[in-house]
Image 1 (cartoon, rainbow, N blue to C red):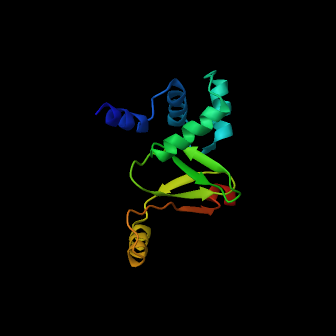
Image 2: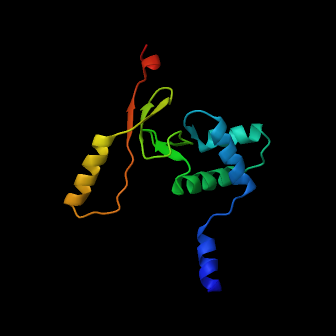
Image 3: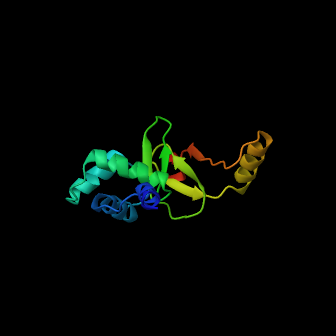
Length: 138
């Protein structure tokens, strides 16, 4: 029984000071930011969190669903804590990075139908729509 408890505890990530620092920062900033930008903000706060730890923490937070990530068309990965706790999608401005959270019930139905047609279960997806926001278009 002790082995089972130890195995279960090994899967639950520890709450560390560094993770707390990254989460506190993400709660206080708007929009998506790169790991490097977030690391610089942490340095300015004198938080003492290394860049490698920032990358690992961000990936863990994405994996556990605590934050969202998106990839820009050039491949850069950006992170943020979203205001919606349920599944949603993003409109992303290619110029300024402004992001709008949107629901997509038609997309959800389509994804479920497509998965079922091919015998897939327990599916997930992400959808980012890139364009130019109204402010940047002017």
